[in-house]
Amino acid sequence: MIMGPRDHLNGEGYRIFQEGLKITPPWFVKEVRLNEDRRRLDIILDFPKGSRFKCPECGCECTAYDTRIREWRHLDFFQYATHIFAPLPRIECPTCGVRTVEVPWASRRSGFTILFEALAVELSMSMNVSKAAKKLRISDDTLWRMLRRSAARALEKQDLSDVFAVAVDETSWRKGHKYVTFVFDYWEKRLIFATEGRGSDTLALFADHLKRHGGDPMRIREVCCDMSPAYIKGVEENLPRASVTFDKFHVVKAMNDALDKVRRRESAHCAELKGTRWYWRKNEKDLSAGQRESLERACLSGACKQTGKAYRMKILLQRILDASVGLHPEDARSQLKDWCHWALVCRIPEVAAVGMMIKRHFEGIVRWFHSRMTNAMVEGYNSVLRAGRAMARGFRTVGNVILKSFLMAGKLDFDFPRNIWNPV
Ligand SMILES: [Zn+2]
Picture 1 (tube, protein in one colour):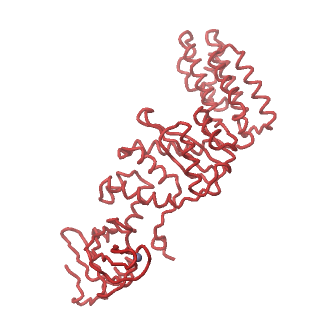
Picture 2 (tube, protein in one colour; picture 1 turned 120 degrees about the vertical axis):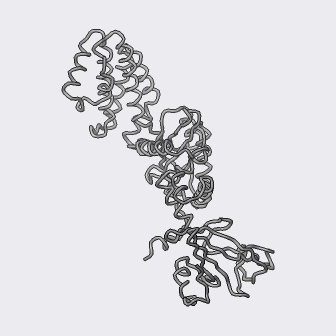
Picture 3 (cartoon, helix red, strand yellow; picture 1 turned 90 degrees about the vertical axis):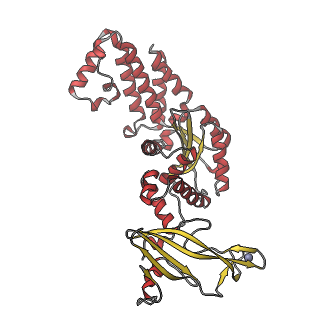
């Protein structure tokens, strides 16, 4: 079925397309072809002879010098895959030479309209990219390329001038053979930088990135990270005025791991420890009566004294670091010092190792009592990414992992025409 200017609609019928597509003069809808069998709608645009177009470089107006028919995939019109065709003019600008003009409905060199790209980005933010590609009926590669272009445009405009506190964390995949370091604007809770690797140089790259986007490494006053020597070195060298807070959950986790090692060591000789593995991970108040009883039985048994002792120490450490206890920073400092001393003399090697670790990183750990920063926000996001990664087989490259992370957590400002999405 062809709805041409000669049928009874007499051009009026195109107004819906003209307005829906936001086609502005000199462009007009010349013809609309609906192909029922192929479930396809082709919209053919044209411009009156002698129309003038802006030079994309200098803005001066020239008439078309020649044209080439181009095609853009657009949002589906109901069940019809919609394609736009237009004779794309080239102009001969007196200053810039021969240039292809830009059209209002698509970005330069894209085979999709801006609205289609906006929908593609929107879908890819909330679902895995392969799934989104299937929904849009385009290939994974095409979608990744489109996302890369849109994200690059958005990142170009990234403004980091008011970033002063950041959280640094890493994610790994391929069984720990590949790493990406993420830097978040702590208070804005958005991803601002990501790069492959987890060495100290990643923070040098971050400092450069910051400078390129209006930020200043000297203005970064707080950094929250884990106790990796590479990050510590990276902060010292590249963010010299920042105080470091070591994520307290890493400290508690180290203690939990130590407790687990002690339990495993002792369980070889102690029947009471059988089946108690997860109880030791819990807080005292979260234990059921039965669980509490089996822990007590284990603690009383001569063969597993150290597990019981390590558990007490873990509870105490958690209490010191617990925000709801609300210790004064000075009290916390002295209690943590006492705890380290106790750990070093308790004759449990696994716990002594935790004591050493805390001692070595003491200032960064107690910094939490001032900064109150943890990586919980980042870690929460990490688990989202892990889930996404498990679902998406499309993450073939580090670039894709980073891209998907920015879509999920970058709060990017895509320059899509919002007024079309949310008409006032
Ligand atoms: Zn020009």
